[in-house]
Every structure is written in structure tokens, then in C-alpha cells.
Length: 626
Image (cartoon, rainbow, N blue to C red):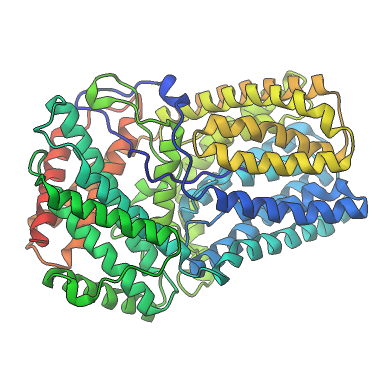
């Protein structure tokens, strides 16, 4: 129902300075960021995938069947950052996962009238959805939509014999969602690759334009900005390489994109020394302008910028040859190429935002959750896993199952928070306790600070959303056509708003979720508003409580493990093929440090060791391009 997409102009999340503990921000959580760069793609896909079954069921006079068809149609929100070959597999598995959860929930509704049991099943599904989305790195909207559909299905009155046809309707909606998601590839088969490379070019250009230390800003603030821009560029380049290495477009077009990316990587490595060593002057500005121009052409669908291999430096040509060989080996062994030595830090599919701790070195990133989703989409582009590898297969399913099993803590934490929320809501007499289950599941993020921010955003957004519902409800109850139009309009508005901040998207998601329940029958507006607001508060509180009581004690260990890998690479002999491993290790260490810094309970991290390793790593990258 909701999605989240990256705006390349957003600054990358910042880590806490040495010796500082994470704080729980409020203003930063509600700050708005720019509109995402591809928000219109999931927005249009979701509207089309929803409109077809809505209009068909409206014509047939069976709007009561909308929730079942919508279960599959909602899958159109996924996979928009993936190349089309990988997207086809990912969407198929999302549809299968959605239908599996829906079938279990519908069967539960048919087999028992116990609200407590239904809440428990919905909470267990929420935990499994969270772990599965983390394991596959499917990216936004992650587990929230899956849980929303399954939890709602558990409370729909059902006969056991009706479950197969209702799941069949969901399958038809899923097939439509798959078709809608793949359709743009007929017109622009290299669209995702173009966007990924454009983001890398834009991030590198921003690094080149970053104010050097000799400017007017205080040294610590300026050094932090350079570090932030440097990491953003490295992460974008890393994501773009993973996209290209899994691309199915013709080799000639892929090689042209690779040359652009190599040129960006070379320019970024040259600008990634110590703050103050970035060479000022027209050369740097001209390079930044050139990269920005190429990015603009890529986004507009213009012919690919011409950068023949002869125009590359010797080291850049060597990397191009290495990339070609690497992709050939990956295809030969039938596996998707993933980031080198990725660890569980990639489970931060919810992204990372800065913790507001005050001081120039810890200024909160503008946009709050928008920055969070920015990192999320970038990570999803680089790390999303099609469960069967490059050729698919049940081996991939087994691997994902093993990964889900390893995330038992996530399953337990989400189940506990969602179940307590649902049972608490039930005890308070709420008629639809599954809303509390969904809210609790939506609160869980990569660390306590992010979970706090998500809870604040959810509460504020839902409060404003129920107010919007009271305004539109009289109109939607004029007739079925008005109800259908309102749902589609709110879905479109959600995708535009949620890229700026999660709470703003929730303002439109909330009335849409309530209206979706209206297809099965109306209830008094005051009752719906009271139930939704109470469910939101109970769910947010239960989710936060579970995050605090069951924290991720492995966050600091992932930082140290990443540091060991990075230092091992740095201790080796420099060689051109080392670039990929070194770049991935640098991104991994910074991501892990940002996640660990957001845990309120976390002990002191080795900040000086991290900073020294990052400086040495970026110097080594620069020498490899010298």
C-alpha cells in the first residue's frame, strides 16, 4: 500500500560523533525532504494494478471481493529499482509470498472465531514477513504491505470453501501486478540501469562540489560534509555496479553505462582524500558539470552519452575489462553477483537516518524518514536478492529459508510487539485489532532510534489521516463510484507524499486503509476514527517496547567484523581488482556503524579506528586510480 523511493538530492545518513550516544529525535523525524526521483513509477503502477480489478468488480456489482483482488494488485509497488530480468523473478516471489500469507490468514478466519488466535496468527505472519524481507533485501515497501493484507484477511468473515476462490482472485491480481511492473521494459529496457548510473553520477558530482576545508565553515562541520558526500558517492557507485552486473540489457549498452560509471568512480576516488585535499578550480567544476549532464541525459531517455573505450585512462580500461570478465563468470555459474562479503548489516532495508545529537558533526539529515528511505532504496538496488539466483531454483528458496531462520530474533521481536498490540487493542474493545498489529510491525526498523522515529511518524500521520478520512467519508458514501475514485486518488497521493517523509505518506495511507475496509460494508465514521486512533497508539507503544526490551546485541559485533575485513584488505598488496572489494567494505563499515550508533544501549564504538580505516581505504582507492 505504501512505497518509498530515493531522492538522489538527499544527504546520506550521518553517524554519531565519537563518544556520543544516540538520542531520540522528534523534529528530525518530522522534517520533510525533497520528492523522490522515481515516485511516479510505483504510483502509476499501483493505480493501474488497482484500477483494473476495482472497475471490473464495480461493473459486476461485487465490490465485496475487492480486498482479495487487491492482495495481489498491491505487489505492483515492489521491485522498481531492479533491472527487469531480476524484477521478473523478484515480483513473482513477492506475489507468491503475498498469496501464501493471505491464504493462511483466510484459513485462520474460517477455522476459528477467536479474536485472540487471529491476532496471534497475524502477529506471527508479521514476524515472518519482516524476516523474509530482510533476508531477500527486497526493498521498499518491505514487510508493511504484506502484513497489512494478511492481518486484514485474518479478520474477514470466511467459509473454508471460499478460501481457494478468494486466493485465486488474489492470484489474478498478482498476475496483473507482475504484468504492470514489467510493462515499462518494453519501451525502455535499460531504465533501471540508467537510473542507478545517474544516481552514481549525481552523487559523485555532489562530492566534487563539496566545500573544501579552506572555506568559511568551521573545520569539523566541513570535514563532516566531505565525509558524508564521500560515503554517499561510494554507496551510489556500489549500488550501480550491482545493478549493471545483474542487468539483462545488450552488452553494448551495458558497456557504455559501465564506462560512464568507471569515469564517475575515478573522479570520486580522486576527490576522496582527506578534507582539504580536493583540488579546487575549473577542472573539478567542469568534471562535476559533465557528470551532471550525463545523468540528466540518462534520466531523460536520450541516447547514451558517447564515451569510447579509447577515451578511458589505462586503469579505467583495465577495470572495464575486469567488470566484463566478472559478469561473464557470474553468468557461467548461474548466480547473481552480490556485493562482496556482504554481512547482515544489509538487513537495514528500512534505511538509516541521523540521530539528532546537536553540534555540527551530528546535524540531523533533512527529511528524517525520507533520508531513511533514500538509503533503503539505494541498498535495495544493490542488494535485492532474487531468491533463486540468476536462473532461479528451489536452492534459492532454501537459502532464504535458512536466512529467515537465522533471523529468529527479528521474528520473535516483531511477533511479541504485534501480538501485545493486537491483544491490548482487543482488550480495549477495538473492533479491528489488526490495525494495531500492522502499526506495531511497521515500527520495527534497523535500530532503536529509527524505530522511535517511525513510531512518531506513524502516530502523527495517522492522527492527521483520520482527520482527512472524516472529510472524505461523506463523499465516498455517496456511491460506489465515489469510493473507488477516492481509493485510487489516495493511493497516488501516498506515493508522492511518502518520498518526502513517512508521516506525510501516512496522512493519505490512513484514509485509504479505512476506505478499503468499506468495500465489505460501512460502519459509523466516529467508530472507525476512534478504533484507528486507539489502534495506532497501542501499536506504536507495543512496537517500541519490544524494540527496547529485545535490542539487537550484534550491531557492535558487525561493526568490528566489518573493520577486520576492511583492515585485511588494506594490509594486502594494492591491485586493480581490489577496488570492488575495498569499495564494498567501506560501504559496509559505514552502514554498520550508522546502525550501531542508533542503539541507545550500545557501548562505545571504536570511532577512531573506524575513522582511520575509512581514511586509509579512501586513500587506497585514490592510489588505485592514480
